[in-house]
Length: 247
Image (tube, rainbow, N blue to C red):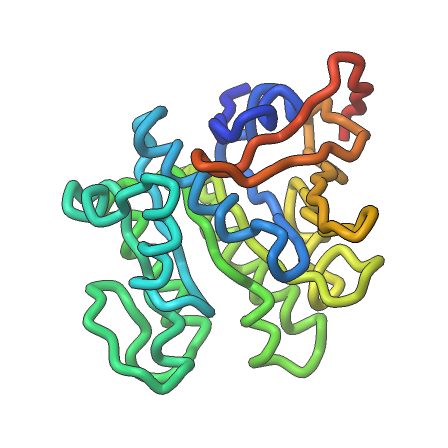
């Protein structure tokens, strides 16, 4: 089975060597837990280490802010864009009522059909093998029922799993309620994998941990793993005696 290695320190050994090529994985977490950094690292490593071009769809952060965030880890997105190895789709500026000069963007109001079309165009143009949508929680604002959110996420996920594309996708979702797994409560049922990032207060300080809830057709860790965000991005602390299960 072909794997898309994340290149994130300590993670691939917890998920059978990487994500299954062409699958969709949901990454959920609280504000400040490191979701966007995780997504950027997944794409940057894919391009620079594994020769897999990528697309980043930003629904809440404007592209220049995204590039600045990546820059603090030494990830120069401008260079990758110039080489036509990375596309950033700006779906955030329009929502904020701001103009955009980005080549790929939604410019005439937020519309799911237009967004899906723009994603397909970008994936085809750079022959992308990886995609990140940050964050799909923003899609829920357009719909009143969880079933509508689920249907639209399924539509995009199904398009990306097309055999002609074989795109490995990371969908990012916010967690609002402490015991929830996603914003609308339905996103996890669409994805083939689910990873949560959480912040916990321990002795007056915040600590981060990661938990893999499911990863289809893959033995994976059942334990919480602490991680830190350092100069090179996310680094996960692993245990030698980690138990695994097959989802």
